[in-house]
Image (tube, rainbow, N blue to C red):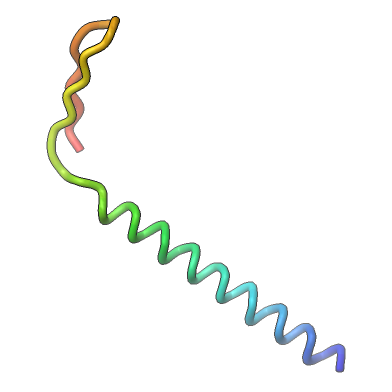
Length: 49
């Protein structure tokens, strides 16, 4: 019975890792590309995405 519990633990950890990686990749790909313009106390800053 202990062997089955270890197997379930490994499968669960792999599923969490795959889901976490999928969420990370989705967020990175969904960021808009282009130029970001910020105006603040330190002046104007321009960043290219």
